Figure 1 (cartoon, rainbow, N blue to C red):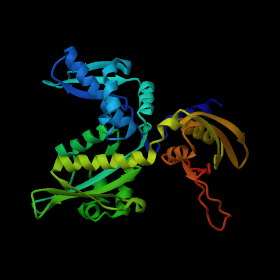
Figure 2 (figure 1 turned 90 degrees about the vertical axis):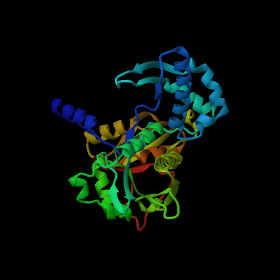
Figure 3 (figure 1 turned 45 degrees about the vertical axis):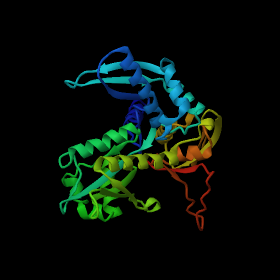
Length: 351
């Protein structure tokens, strides 16, 4: 029994999901000139607006008039602040806000609410400069790579710029990124546990001094190409904003429905033993929309979990879609599979 418990604990600690928990959604870091009260208040008010953008997934949230008015009552939302002086000659203010109060403000402003479990996106970016093509890495374009991470952090979007080491280059090079060859890109992205992958190519416009950035997802459902034109920094920032906007529209939930409690029964096939049942329960509890999980019934063929959750069934299925351990159940005896958008029947895929 003791060995079984140790095994369970080890599995629960080590499991990985396709989604990533964004741990700094309710805080912001800003550069400040000094530690005066006026400077701190101004920065803290800006931080509140930035957090509303991250939590809602709406890039215009900081322009909301009511939100700007609420910054006058900044102390009502702040949890704490501290200064970071580790970088010589640079002073930063770290402002942390109370999640419950920010969520309530999101609801009051009728903004979307995007949970902390968010898909990790691998960004494969190539640049053509002076007729030479090269992939963006920390070594080749360190400032551009940092710009991607900074803008993604501003939007609360977990991203990874691949290392492009020997392991990556065994599968991916300039031709694969430039031509958006989905197979090798997605295979290489698995190394980073990325839920989504995009390929992007940046090159000079022949008719102007502008740069052009063409990017798209590698999966077939979202294969349309997006084109941005401008200077390098501008179009990279726009790409991240567009990417965050699209994912937020897919995963964010109705703010007013968030506080409406509902319950549902999820039927899980393939959980063969006690370890599977408990691990599945733990993963269900980790979903942003789930407030409580109880085991309603267990048979030799399936387990029924009662889920208390916020939002509606669509919101619950969105959250489940971020976890690779839960797949829509397909009856092997059925002649063809009919997708029911309200079905909560899943197959357990051992992580």
